Length: 346
Image (cartoon, rainbow, N blue to C red; front, side, top):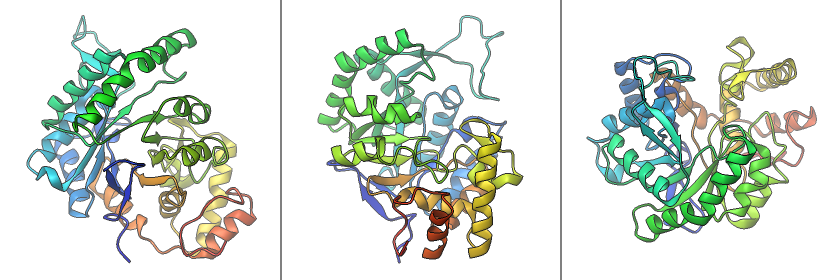
């Protein structure tokens, strides 16, 4: 069987085909801790050596640092050998007082102030700035980033949404029509947004960061179904639910970019017991599960160390018996009618 690292799936009705396994780069932007330059390069190299050819980044990740680091690595590679997606909706600017500027929530990153802008000019400027940081003359797709209540109050969200629908979408349509990009999508952090906003905007794909994971399938019959019905592909952006499905209950217990509550910890502990029974690693189950959904085209776990990306490469092709998925369902740990990976008789 061909490795999922190199197997490609088509994004909606576009010319873009993405590998089933990619690499998210928020961690290289120093989300949870400082990442030395050599370690960042070694992490990209480990992914490349293992066959990873799809990389997702954003201006927000490390306030430009992730794009700089990724571009520095990729600029010596043949452009036809890899895929890059980055985000729009933020532009970066010199802070008024660099000496006192806070880079929060990034542990490191760069000294750049963020301005949200989903207008025509804002989308175009965000795109052009990203190309310069990446040292590339093209990216494969753009993602509308963080247009949700987690980042904006209700009034501001309405204003940004109007700017996007009235003018920002025109910029994305023009870039796609001209061939500058092959597709565009929206980053989705919340279940309500997946079922609502993303369905009111014409998209090629949704980059779903939390609403559909091994832990939580509440969106199966709402947002995920809407994507399937509308022909919108899904890229799964946080398959480890921001950490706990990679580390298990003996790790830092990160969930949804915060601390996991006891109910989540207990659910993961129960999953670990089923994993032990069937000789399955929890990260492998977490990576392979969402790819079984018919709308899903790719999964992009993050990594900040070479051993993390090589572990992801091993996990994506780990053999998982059908009995494993059946037992998760029998214990109510995943939704009974959730699609599971091929070969399952669950």
